[in-house]
Image (cartoon, rainbow, N blue to C red; front, side):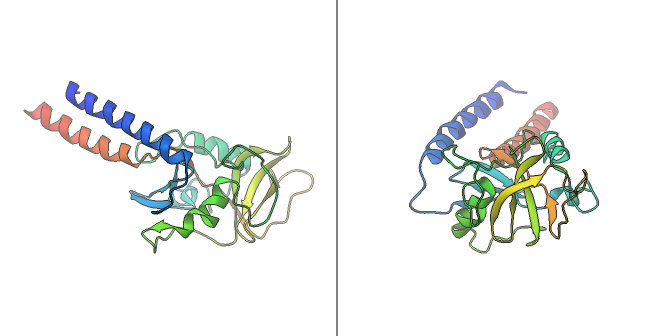
Length: 211
């Protein structure tokens, strides 16, 4: 790769790092908190994280018949996920912005999923932003363990953050659930510029080789 491309890429990454730190430290008084970054990515400004716009991507790519997974399978799948060349995905965090918790409560905006719906969704860009494959009767895993047998999860009905057996359908006493237990990958930082940079780099490299 030409050295000038590497220089531009390094400078751009440093700019993102510095601005992300500022954004993360304070909630903006004006402007959106949830931004559609294109390519199926949504950026939560206050939490400084990127979501997939597809709320059941595991189903979309055929990871399971309906996207449902137990906690262990969810962690493993997200850890190995590559979306448009982006790796480093994880399960959302149930703790508050200050690192406190996790706690169990209804209408809970502490965790990253609760914050997405109860805070960030009130200031979206564009205002009519819609999720893909979102189901109201669903439960999403958090990455935080509650015990050896349980992990934290977020139930859309009631916006409730609480505990769920790591394998809701197994064990001696399986939990009777009417909601789907799903996985929603999240990534630290604003990763959307990385996609654009990779596209520009590939095109430039191709043209450089042909010259």
